[in-house]
Image (cartoon, rainbow, N blue to C red; front, top):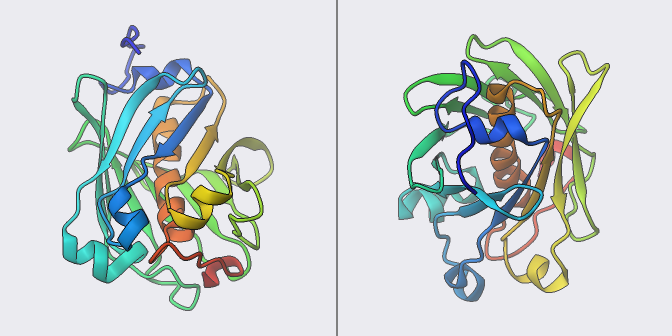
Length: 235
């Protein structure tokens, strides 16, 4: 997809986001993982609703972190445009995701361009249902994400609702999409759909996209290609 004209005050590389209200995130299938369970760096194609690739997301991590820490590993994800220019950088430190440690929950820093923070994805404390906050660069809550009690991905789509920061108005949705029995059972290559208002600030759109990767790691990244679904934040 060719780069469109950049709107005013738009971080370079995010001009694509000003034109869309939906993104499709497809994780690439890694044969090494599928056959022997050896964890490799995740890669994702980010496409528009017409199937045109607008970004490529690539995890940059070491072998030890991937195969020892598993889905809980810290990560850096580089998001590249079609000219292989890094336009976003996501950083997740090593933290706890269980509801029993409410003071050290997950957080992803979003930079666009790399080196300039535009927002954060912050996990909220919850026992039954996953909850996250989309924050601006100052750490102020902008949007709220609420997940289901059960994140069982073998039964169909799993939806995380995006709403205003007080939860009163629906804004969009992050959906983990059913990929078919074979792919679901034997790989952890997942498909997601992300929807938001077309006039939403591109920085907030980019941070909502970043939340998709955190949700993938926390709830749908398998170890040894085995599902780990459990109630709420106990997964």
